[in-house]
Image (tube, rainbow, N blue to C red):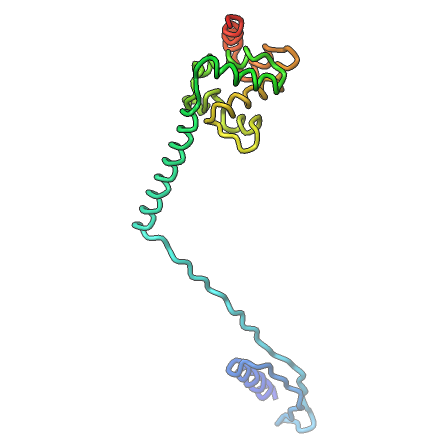
Length: 205
């Protein structure tokens, strides 16, 4: 009886494996040893086949990569040239510069001489997009993250006007609009020597 039982199970499993369809066994099976004893199965066996989707991504050859990097380098160089050209277009005569300082100072309610003094100490009143060893950039020498915090939307760190207005905003919000020049300058550059130097230039204007 046990042998027939095992054979029946094996047959059922083999049927499922080769057919791939569910198998139902519900008919009584009569044993050879004892015709009166019947074993009844009510079993459902099924298999689920998981299909995996394979996505083929085209790789980049060495020559393609080299060409792409060259194009990107040229694009960056052209962008830098355009930015520098914006800076060169500004007039740096004292009259034009002071008109710019006064406009920015009026907007942020600070002394225009303070802006001129900062510009003088930072880059000698340059309109060029200079960059320091520490990463400070532009006519007013801003760290990029600081410039984004104080500049108007869409401003260019290398643009003289944008830089001056961002500097005026920083100085005003740091205390200059309330007359606290020392605090404003120290926030601009964390050095008392810098604070004293800018104040000296400011007082000489």
